[in-house]
Amino acid sequence: MPANLPPQYYEAEERYRLAKTNQEKLAILKKMWAIMPKHKGTDKLQGDLKAKISQLKKEIQKKKKTGKSTYSRHVDKQGAAQVVIIGSLNVGKSQLVASLTNATPEVAPYPFTTHEPLVGMMSFENIKIQLVDTPPITDEFIEPWLPEIIKYADYVILVVDLGSEDILEEMDMVLKKLDESRIRLTAKEEEVENDELSDKFCKKTMILGNKSDLEGAEERFQMLKELHGENFSIVSVSAKNLEGLEELKKKIYEELNIIRVYTKEPGKPADMMDPIVLKKRSILIDAARVIHKDFAYKLKYAKMWGSSKFSGQQVDRNHPLEDGDIVEFHL
Ligand SMILES: Nc1nc2c(ncn2[C@@H]2O[C@H](COP(=O)(O)OP(=O)(O)OP(=O)(O)O)[C@@H](O)[C@H]2O)c(=O)[nH]1
Ligand SMILES: [Mg+2]
Image (cartoon, rainbow, N blue to C red; front, side, top):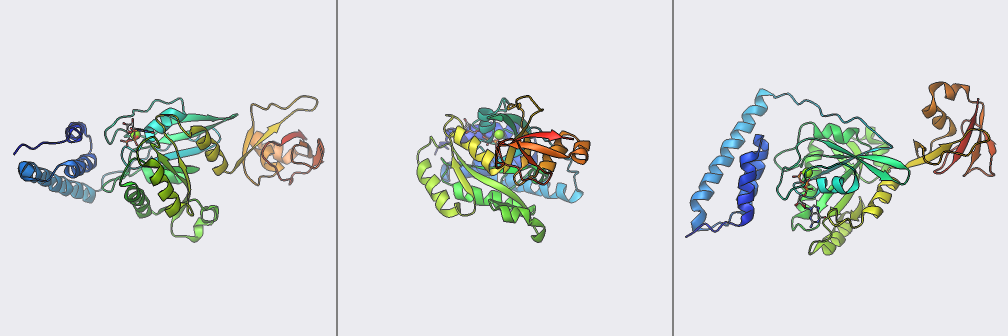
């Protein structure tokens, strides 16, 4: 009986040849195992594959015991906020970053394309938001430095594949892997703000269903909303066909809970292209601090246009700020 293997098997095999780490190799072998039809014609192959998988597992265990160092891949923040894109294999994380930013990460039909964090800047109206593409999280492996990147970021986008039958399992797997690293992904602001009360590090997260162009995507999107809609904001896009991306950008901005405040000098118009970005519920003195440390001390009062009762109203240092406010500082 001929083995009759599907083309995906040969793609995975090629990928296996190029794989750099044992963890990657193991994940690919498991994928090959899943793809391989189980019948008499593949008996020998099945045996070989099993042996390889078990050998690799042993090697990985041994390495763990000798305690390899886990050096960090810290990504400096740039722009108004840093958003990290995570998810399991092949869900389109890199395609998303390629479609939303000026960056050109490698996008490919096989798993484990991305090995390192890669940064792109996404424009939204008059600000820029930094996106960080990351390697996949699998049941077998998570890059040891990835949890630190997630903890440091301002916001997380967990990408899932709306074309995949295993969408729920894959999402749960990612949540579980992060839970093991003591990270809880949540949409709930209260949890994030009070996470010192929890034994977990809580991170505000959106679930992004990608590949909305594929068959069955709409049903899976509805199912996700039903099952997880209470705990997460859930958005659907096609990163490849550029569908839903404008709504996504707006949603990211809203979820970041930031405001833009503009400054002006007396007698001149405000520079509406260069906002100061602050957390929601910031006050005047916070804006002053961003401009200069000394500014906050020297500030006597400010005039304000926007959310104040009347235009050009004189306000004090504790005055609350809102998105779109214009302030004129007086020292
Ligand atoms: N149909 C469809 N395919 C997509 C979409 N986005 C990405 N893909 C395809 O999915 C495959 C994987 O895309 P990547 O962006 O490399 O996925 P990834 O999540 O970065 O993969 P890893 O880095 O290996 O984890 C590629 O073949 C893409 O062309 C989409 O919106 N629709
Ligand atoms: Mg990738």
